[in-house]
Image (cartoon, rainbow, N blue to C red; front, side):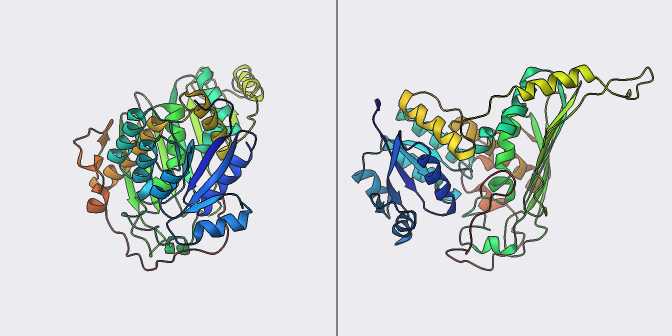
Amino acid sequence: MTGGRMLKIGIIGTGGIARTHIDGYGRFAAECAIVALCDIAPGKADAVRAELGLSSVRTYERIEDLLAAEDLDLVSIATPPSTHAELTVAALRAGVDVLVEKPMAPSLEECDAMVAAAAENDRILSVVAQNRFRDDMATLKEVLDSGLIGPVSHAQVSSAWWRGTEYYDLWWRGTWESEGGGCTLNHAIHHLDLTAWMLGAPSAVTAVLTNAAHENSEVEDLSVAVLQYDRALAEVTSSVVHHGEEQAIVVQGRHARVSQPWKVVADVAEPNGFPAAGGDATRATKIEALAAAHTPLEHEGHAGQIGDVLGAVRERRRPVVDGTDGRRAIELVTAIYVAGIERRTVDLPLPAHDPYYRAGALVERAPRFFEKTASVAELPGDITVGSSSDD
């Protein structure tokens, strides 16, 4: 039991996104303290410690040494996706709770190993899904849950990002083996998680993949998927070729349309079936009132999720986003890849005997759109967060 004492935090991986975790824990300085940084690159953890003025923090180059030397309550894992499963399982088996960056892992087999390790060792596992901790998305979820728009008929989800070719020069990006996939896995994972959170799991997926603008990368930089529900369809565009990064979620219900960026439209029919002027003003007013009544979150983004995970660690409860949630998003990504590679409709859930369930399947089967032509240890400049989240 942690009681009321300060929780001891370790950060594994000290690249750009680790700073977001460090900042998030800093918002809860009365509850927790970062005591250790770990990075396999010699001197990298030391450099981050010095840069951020974390003089009392100890540094390590091997997770084995970190776990053996420190009495940790929680670790954030902020390393490349291909390493998530191994590091997460090691921490859980050492009795440490885990917050792991998105995407959870490149394969469902690895996700299931992570979920099983959490259960077997009675540990908490949370997967980063920071967009659930945004006021605009929480408002949209509340409106959908209210039933005011009626049964959903259609959703358009635009996970629109833009990255230059230099983005894929970083050593672990741009290959199926080290990055696990392209924009569908590493960027649209945010929007696919939101889609599953708001609409539930689809019954089938079809998709197409391409590399439209990044000749130094094996992986896709654009995919378009259609998710099939009982009586509804959702279109999901995953991209790093969209100038302006204008991201959106538009949900059409039987009685009204709502979206983020925020917009409400509620049509009603004339006797001939065409939309009547003015629409259903009463319903639109109710939706606007419900949205206006949303209680702002105390912390948004990573900080919001970190606050929830710290509470879960203290209270030994399920976090808002757990390993099962992270797995659900990976299952959607996997289905999109299978549909695009095999050029067929993929039924969900994916069974464990499906070839694409296992680790390494995409490395073996996915197309190499182009050959990766550069591999650098670091890229200059800061990470920019686009219009909604970190990557």
